[in-house]
Length: 338
Image 1 (spheres, helix red, strand yellow):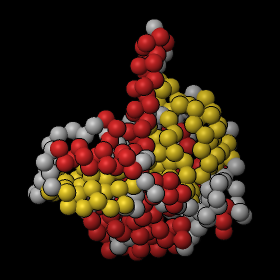
Image 2 (cartoon, rainbow, N blue to C red):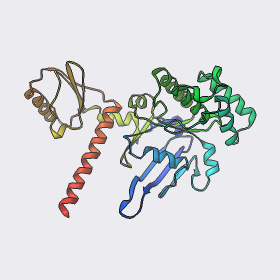
Image 3 (cartoon, helix red, strand yellow):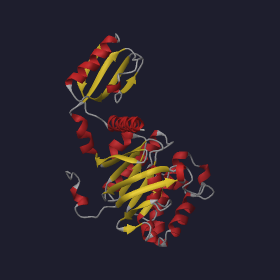
Image 4 (cartoon, rainbow, N blue to C red):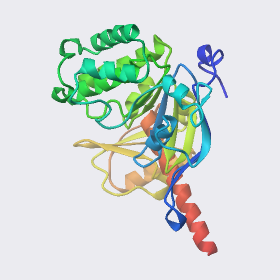
């Protein structure tokens, strides 16, 4: 595989190594496999996007990395330390902001939260105070540092949570939906900060998000999960390149109210008041002409057809739909054999 980020990868071991990782809940006939035998390597010094729909297994995997959930099978190493056997050393490597609003104590002030989490992780007092001052100033929270966090907006609370995750200056930062519920300005601040953590401080950031435009903007590499299984794990540029030569956008006048034929179910549709934009991969020219013929039969005037650069959202939808189709085909095959 082409190494397009050699400066860090060639000199440092992987930040995270996951081997044969599985997590099951329940017993007997009621077992639910949240994560199914995944293998994953996260290079150091990059933003690694961990993507998938709700229930895909992302948060379960993140919690296993943090040591909050015990795997059913498999091994996780963080900067060479085994999560199961060297938990204390692992905790020094990681700062985490998990999805939700309870990563910090609301009755404490921003400053008290930082002091609490810094002491909890054994950070020396002098270094802790220096970092706390810098973090609060960079996140525009300095003037409110003594106010109870419960009085803060959702965005300000999220900034405090991120600052608490970084108070010990960990080399790896896990951010689970860091911009969820934030306004545009607060989300932009968080995105800019994530970029600085990697580009200026050399940290590794594991990012889970449903905002695929943000993932495309920030991530060097992405993994996509569906129902506990990895569908892809590649450098972002490489993943987009796989779709570049076969990707089209078709714009028609009017609203498409009929469903597309089955072979085009992986196309995405975007509509405004007067037009519909169909976007997706096309394997052969004959398939493209077939889709155009179908649109013509619906009586929708054609505005434009152009080969387009795929974005991460389109690739994500294609992979998820392909995974769903393969699962349905497998179920039909198993059913026919019973």
